[in-house]
Amino acid sequence: MNNKKLLRLLPSVDQMLRKPEVAGLIEQYARVTVTESLREILQETRDRVMDGGFDESATATGMEEGIVEALAERLRRKGLGRLKEVINGTGVVIHTNLGRSPVPESAVADLSRLAGRYINLEYNLQRGVRGSRHDLVRDLVCGTTGAEDCIVVNNNAAAVLLTLSAMASGKEAIVSRGELVEIGGSFRIPEVMEQGGARLVEVGTTNKTYIEDYQKAIGEDTAMLLKVHTSNYRICGFTDEVSRQELASLGRKRGIPVVEDLGSGVLVHLEEYGIIGEPTVQDSIKSGIDIVTFSGDKLLGASQAGIIAGKSKYIKRIAKHPLARAVRVDRLTLAVLESTLRIYAQGERVLDRIPVLNMLTIPVSTLEQRAERLMELVTDIKAYAKVTIEKEYSQVGGGALPLERIETRVLTIEPKEMAVNELEKGLRMAKTPVIGRIVRDRYLIDVRTVFDEQLPVLAGMLIGVLSGGDGS
Ligand SMILES: *Cc1c(COP(=O)(O)O)cnc(C)c1O
Image (tube, rainbow, N blue to C red; front, side, top):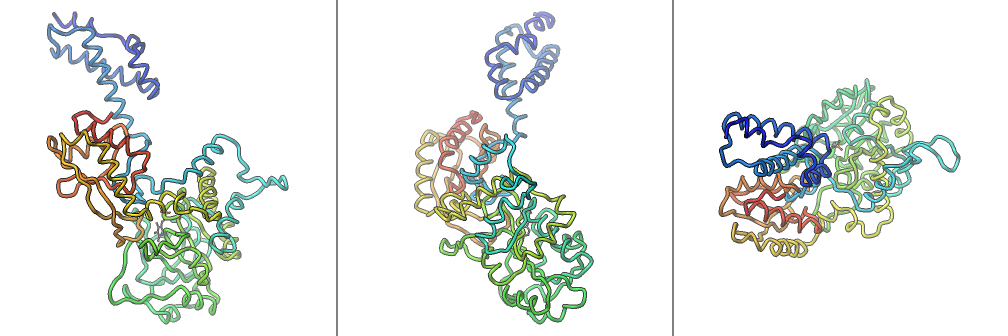
């Protein structure tokens, strides 16, 4: 058969689009995407024919089958760039790369009710006049933290920037040298202060700062005493830091506002679960700090947001600053935040209902059961891999509590017929991507961060990839 005859065996784009297998793909991906990929593949097949890539035995059916297969694979790979559910097998609870906090089910329900409709975002229904979006969560934030007032912005980085800009621009803010934090990315306290127009006055040393250091540094231009929670590192050994109470009382005496960047911001005491060292927002407010800032999507377990809470007179000033408009919180974020805060305000089954808190406080015995259930579901892979359940440690993540190692259970997989990094890659690119980690040539899945409902899907992906499929 010559190349011309072979080319005649090739289907047209339209013929392909009418095939039931392709119709299925159109449903899953968009029609334009399918058509585009189909054109690419048909052109590539034509090129292959011209290069002599097919012989006498080629048939129209065979070629079409090959095209459908290539199309499905191409669409799946293109789809990897889109947002999709992934299975977090890393054991890092607040995993920034994986979206930080999965939000509570009730918040998801509220969001899906509200997202596609008009809502009373800035409309006061009682009075029929314009309202403020900040009114929607004010009572919830104040009720749970003891603050007088609050405003919500995009994220905590924006909260710190806005607070500095509104309260210390052109003036001095005093910070301990032990608290000049970098949070990752480009959030560094000294640089944020510069952006906010505040002059940084460093006091003390890396490991020791005393109240006298702050006292001595206070001058005419001092507009703020800033405390930053060293959320992602600890200074251990020969150390001293000034307590919130001491700093708050110094500020009061000298008439200078005291601000604390709490970072994560947690609303429940987690000490009894072995999670120590994360101050609660209410403790900070109670100790007399004037303004605190914290994240919505770290230990709070809601959407990405920055909450600024504290004394009314400062909040009013912050809310009026022009930057407040630039870092304004959006309605979907606010809907999730409001819904999540309501769980804290109700105070019932809080640890059950907030996924990140649930994952952090889950008993080891439950993790053991979850691992055993996963083990049962993957019985079929024993031919392809050695599988065990072992003790390991999870991390809080999100920069919070870096030294905290929480006992957990992992499924360890040692593939017999493929390299462990091939397994890792296969799972990462599977239909429902699985993100685990490799430790000493074994693939580990920490079950702490896997939802119970995800176990069958996870098992399916493992079986698919290990048995030579692709998990799809
Ligand atoms: C995480 C963190 C931030 C930044 O918060 P985002 O919500 O991620 O913007 C700022 N300060 C501290 C101390 C933090 O831990």
